[in-house]
Image (tube, rainbow, N blue to C red):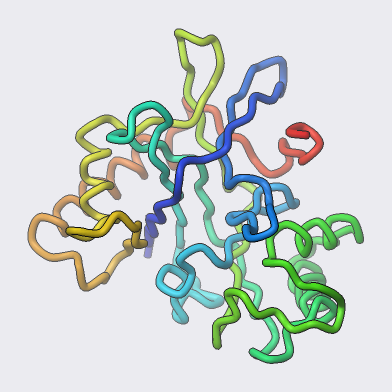
Length: 251
């Protein structure tokens, strides 16, 4: 079964990088600050998603699920808040079950991270492990301090397949490839699905969500078909994979 989880986010940070001679303007969660972690994390050998709205979008039944689960991250377009871009598509390969609440120290997180990747045939370097800890996780003061922010009772990460990607399309006027922009009618569907009346916050939406009634259910079905047909299964757009990305490109 194919499942689609749509996760709204604030306007993304953007940066132009050069790959295979092409100018690529990628959009991503802004670089970590004192009160902000990076999620999804796209600078590792595989994309990782853990915290942003995870209490809703990362369902318990998704842990080690055999379903094809796609996490699609959308954000308002800079300069036109009525349009949405799709900046990241993660197809879940496996999940990482983090230590029990109250025992999540830097060291225990490192062990769980390395073991989960090794169990799936991927050996992370010490630098890669430390980068994930430093940038994807909220700040932990030292090796023995317990994770406090985003410290849910059940905490797990979705790790993407190696072909999870950032979807890009040609921007003719500026001669670069930028994040795929949803047409206005589909942007309107996104807005209606991830926002609630009288509230500007974004809420994840997925199959079986109790908000999916009548028009919203129809909008979700049409949007899901559009995303699969025109983005996930479309080989004519540029797809930037984890192996093509490096934090050094944006410094």
